[in-house]
Image (tube, helix red, strand yellow):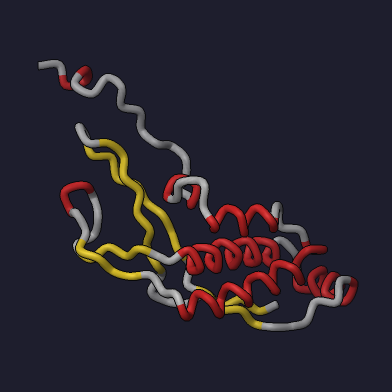
Amino acid sequence: MDEKNIFKDYTPKKTPDTIEDYLERPSKVYEILGEVGEADISQLNNLLTLFNKYEKKAKKSVGKFEKGNVAIGADSDQYYPSDEELIVSELGIRITQLIESYSNQQLGTLKLKYKIMSQQILFFEISFRHVDVMGSGRFFYADKAAKETKIEI
């Protein structure tokens, strides 16, 4: 038996797993994230306002654990985040990347220029993973970090 030809059409995924892989379109999540566009320091106040709005909603609309299908790569107790949690995580990641792209001195100057208040944001990052199950397909799963990410702005 030629093992290399059993799954001729299989192509391994070589890119990082993202929300784009996990969540189908159309979705409220993409609508909200589409309003934001690319993260830019001049838009940080808008990002923070949106983050804070959805952070409150996420506390009221938490995801849930369900019995997962281990045969296709799910955890035995698989976490399914709410749309609000996904929005908060994605916004939090964008804010984090934006903040970390500047030195403390540069950030201080930009905060003054754009009237950005010093503050702290907390969020649970949602990460994504995939499992290739030969003969069944590729499945994507979300995982909620056990510890909150804390960002000082």
